[in-house]
Length: 210
Image 1 (cartoon, helix red, strand yellow):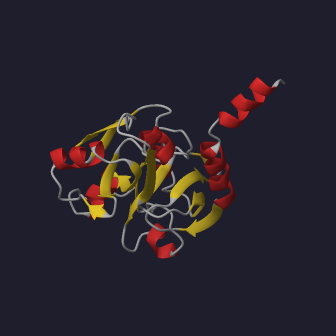
Image 2: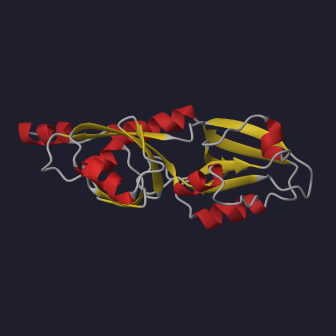
């Protein structure tokens, strides 16, 4: 390998790979007990396109249900597998079907990565000439440019922007959010969460437990 090959190697962004394996190292296995015929009592949502770990997130738990009763789970936890079946990379509907299929089980083993419900994003934008590389509609990130500074900073499609540079934008008009992002340079700090989770936590949607 010549010097040019080495320079290419060192120019690669290994952060996503490091974060992925870090997540794997942090995963833990939990065992939940439930009654036969009882639902697990959870609501799950997609982690969002662009996630380091593309799996489902625990968005809500039914009061008194097996998941809440266990005291072992928290809103925001990422579920990697259930009873040995991996959920990583599977569509949301498939994951929901797997959980619904647990109804007659009395013991459920979950492999999870414990995460806070809010995702912290850090976009490094040296100058206004650099595109942010994502689009927003009513506070929700709806598209993301592959390999752009936003993806590298942790932006995820389907997430609701909660905060920009320390300022809440929950009640901010779409135009002002776009303006704030368009004019930002340097380090842009954001907090986001899956839009479906945001609607559940703010009472905009009624949870449907499975």
